[in-house]
Amino acid sequence: MLIQQKDNGHKGVFYVGEETEPLAEMTYTMATANKMIIDHTEVSDELRGKNVGYQLVHTAVEYARANNIKIIPLCPFARSVFNRKPAFADVLN
Image 1 (cartoon, rainbow, N blue to C red):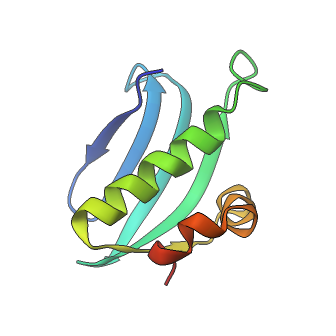
Image 2 (cartoon, rainbow, N blue to C red; image 1 turned 180 degrees about the horizontal axis):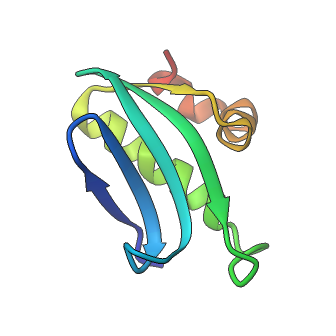
């Protein structure tokens, strides 16, 4: 599954599907140059149950690792993924 990213410097999104009408998306805000706040995750009914939400969080974790960024998961879904995946703790703020 292709997960894309759009970043405008302060806000951004990881998404599946078309940018204008994504089938799944996880939005974030850059609180500072090295702190990302994940604020919302949404998956369409069409993709529900296919682990797409987890894949979005995993992609954000890989992005954070590659760019020396810490994540603050304010989104309840993202927070639940971090709580279940101790391997992601290295990027938590």
